[in-house]
Image (cartoon, rainbow, N blue to C red; front, side, top):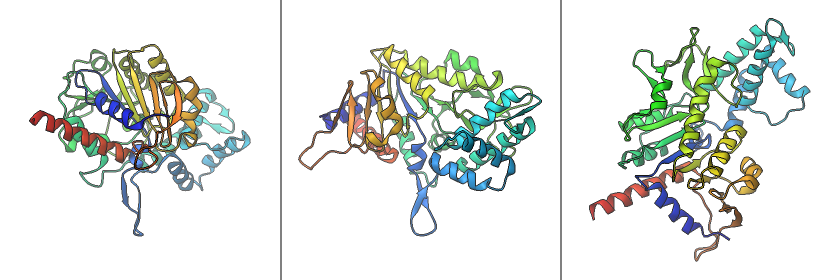
Length: 373
C-alpha cells in the first residue's frame, strides 16, 4: 500500500521549488473539466473529450461521400475504437503515397478536401472561450503568476485549443510559444533553441499543434488567431511527420520536452493526459530512464484499470516515473492501493483538472502566508 497523503506532500514540495526546473503536461482531460450550462438545467464540458469530438465530426460529415469512403477503409481493416485523430492521420498517410494517382479509392484532391474538412471540424469544436475569469485555467495562471522562478516554468500540452493562452492573457502573464511578431507572427526556431527569454515568461509548447497555426503556400509557419479558411491548419495528431514543412514545428516542440527531461532535478507533472500517444510516451519513458535525477508524476482521472494507456505502459515505467490513479498508484516501481485513513479509504482526485487547479491555488496561498510570516 502507498500513503497518498505523504505522496501529496512530496508533490506540494516539488511544485513549490523555484530554483529547479518544473513543467506541466496538459492533456485532453483538462478542458473537459471546464463546465458550461447545457440548456437543460445541467452542465456539459466546454470542449468534449476525444470520443465526443469524434462523434461530433462523424455526425457533421455523415452525408459527405468522400468521408464515407474513408470510414469504409476503417471498416474493411476492422479497425474499431478509432478517433478523429486516427482519421486525420490516415488521410495524411494516404496523401503521402498517392502522388497523382489514387490511394484506396481516394485521389489527391479528395484527400486534400478531407484534410481541410477534418481540420475545420476539429477547429470549430475546440475554438472556445473560457466562460468566466475564475476557471481552473485561471487558477493555474494565478499559481504561475504567484511564483518568482529562477528556472522558467515549461507547460507542454497535447491540446489544440487556446484556453491556457486566454487565461494567461487575462492575468497579464507573459508567455513564449515559439512565435514572434505582431502582424503575422512567425515560428522562430532559433529563439526556441537559444532560450534567452526571461525566466518569468512561461514556456508554452503545443506538442500536437494548434488551431492558430497555419502553414502558408511559401512554406512559412505562422500563428493566426482569425477563424477563416482551415487550409494549412497545422495539427499533429500522431508521430507521423508527413513532410519537411510539417515536421519542423512538431519536432521543435518534442525537442523542448527532451531538453527539459535532461536537466538535473527536472520535475514533471502530467494532468489530463491519457497516455494514448505512443511516441510521446517513449519520449517520457526514455527521458526519465536516462536521467535518474529527474522525476515525474502522472495524475490520472480514473481507476488504474480503466486508464488503458497508462496500464499498457505500467510495466515499462522507470522508478522515477510515478503514476497516481484514483484507486491506487505505481510509486517507485511498486503498484499498490492507497492506505486507508481515519476518514475511510483514500481516493486520489487530483487527476481531475479542476481539483488539481484548486490544489495549485492552495499552494499559492501557503506560499503567500509563509512570505508574510
